[in-house]
Length: 181
Image: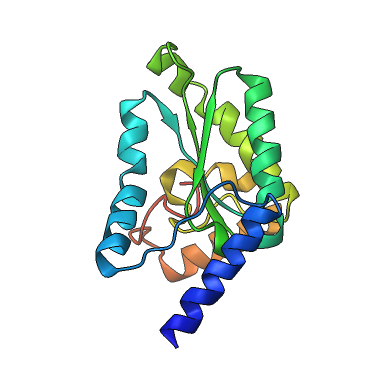
């Protein structure tokens, strides 16, 4: 059974490479190789930090639109800031991508990070245009709880606020995490 799964994965990846849908691929052949690949994946955010400022997005779009989203979002942010370095990675196969943006080489970190909201609007508008969400694996959190109101119907936010007040009249359960305070 495991051999069939491995062969199927290799066949799918080989076809993706042949059709130009992927540039490179690797399949772990052992538990140790799998651990090494996970260490690489888990170190991406840390490595980005060493490169300077990183504007992070955790978005979702339909899997069928992932390649188009990455291409369109990459082009849009590059048009806004030449030299910006998109770093999309993550769970692309399930419609979730960490679409991080590393600062241009030589740019001041603080000046770059001051552009966070500007780039969030660009990336989030594109994700929304593909029928996606500005929030995926990590939820809204405090950074996006005001941003999400741009994508929700006002009635939806009002109903959520009413429900929150009914269930949590003292406002002590995760304040500011899902709805703006």
